[in-house]
Length: 64
Image (cartoon, rainbow, N blue to C red; front, side, top):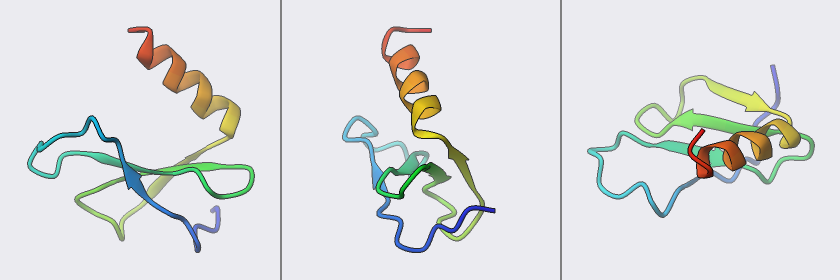
């Protein structure tokens, strides 16, 4: 499991007010991007390589 100490978590500015139904991303860690449920900040997090995360974000922005 990846070490997430030092992760700086942020929510998208486009999250709006979804009754806390948001994800948070930490992209300040070397060699990985972590994603977690904002309603459960001490729960599990998914981790991705920076390349995989960039690919996901690009696909999402283009509607795929």
